[in-house]
Length: 135
Image 1 (tube, rainbow, N blue to C red):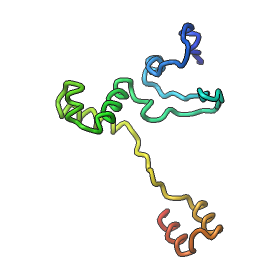
Image 2: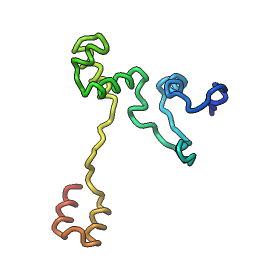
Image 3: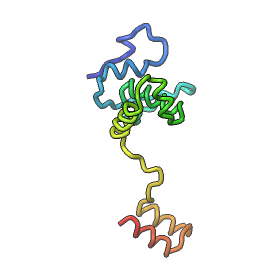
Image 4: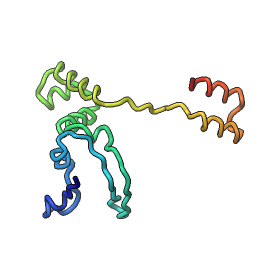
């Protein structure tokens, strides 16, 4: 089933609010099939998953934004939301538990290691060591 948000909200002049998308999808997984770069008008079509943070509920997105803006200060979060330390920690733990860990320094693939060795960027001993780490 395809729903065109422009047809639902015909008076919309500009981008559809993510809150509306979240309301319509009711927490179900979403695949984006078309993106447009606003500045250039270039459209990209394919099948894309939303980033993890965009999959959070609107309330949890607001919470994460407030946490980042407060530089991670739980004291400031207590004041902002008017709740106790354990409540803030509990919500942070719940949100963190729903997010996958993203390795910011993944190991290179076997093919990448061999290609670097072929180009002379690493010594054979380095390639052997790196390949050993993959096992």
